[in-house]
Image 1 (cartoon, rainbow, N blue to C red):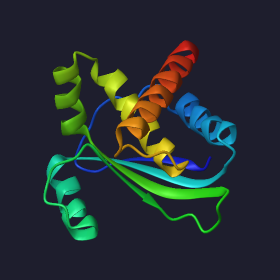
Image 2 (tube, helix red, strand yellow; image 1 turned 45 degrees about the vertical axis):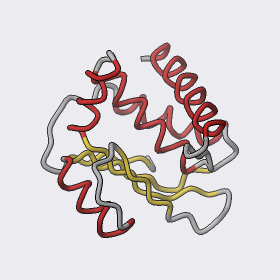
Image 3 (cartoon, rainbow, N blue to C red; image 1 turned 60 degrees about the vertical axis):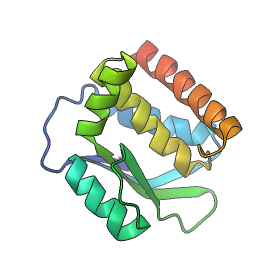
Length: 142
């Protein structure tokens, strides 16, 4: 399978991994892309902050960093780093379960690789709608 999950200094249950991998492959197909290779790395705040400083020159905590290594406009290859600590904190902040917030961020990174953005208000709304659509569709299957 072209989707791989790694855990760097964090441990938590990630249920239905095979289903999630298949769902992600289908997400890319529905968006008009082929998925060649995608690695998710679940890590700590400090590890993600280090990457954020090193590669983006940002000095703030974040829940996700997405690196697009695609060499073709229609074939996706990338790495997505997710802070489990930040996901847990955001879940509490927004009144969501850890599992729901984790999947939101997993889909968020995939959507970035499909070309969706979240800096402008209209883009944020579109991104949130796509996240919600994928959460609903995925949890209907899980």
